[in-house]
Length: 262
Image (tube, rainbow, N blue to C red; front, top):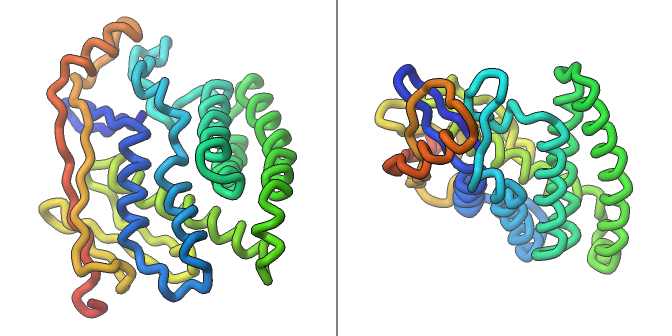
């Protein structure tokens, strides 16, 4: 769950909605310069779309931080709860799509776990993160073995695995950049293919993309959130009721390539 803040209210955006937004961006991205087969690009787009499927239960019944009464943003989750959600996401990708998709999504969450280790001091968090990293290393090996027939036909299977992971990371980042703040700072990052990319917010929810990386001149995007009062909530039920009673709000963006690149 994303808690998008402003002075008067919070906009609650489900993780599933963020992942759908990420998939829409990936679907319009220019992959033609990449020497990877179309069916594998399609799998990578599915990985982007479904990488947060494990959040469905939490999204349907989000919880507060008992110490503050504030709805827990995905960045504030206790590691034992977060890693359980990550496992569900990974398992869904393997069972419903393909073992390779599970590898890419597993690597994505392992990167989040490594980053979290540097900032989490609670012993339960540290234990959960170390356990997750240890089991996922074995899990990724098993998934690669299950995909061996596909990988055997590749001149560079490690590159395929690395590129798919970068695809999930990149489009997750871009979608979160859009969703998490009303007025984000410009984002400078690197595309899965290694190109330098800058996303610059303009007026009226327009976003300038620094290179000709979209298949269309403009990409129109939208997602839905639930506005609630920016205040502590007594318990999970009060939060659930506030979200259930909220009138859904649509956020819209227009991504366009820079004029000098288009």
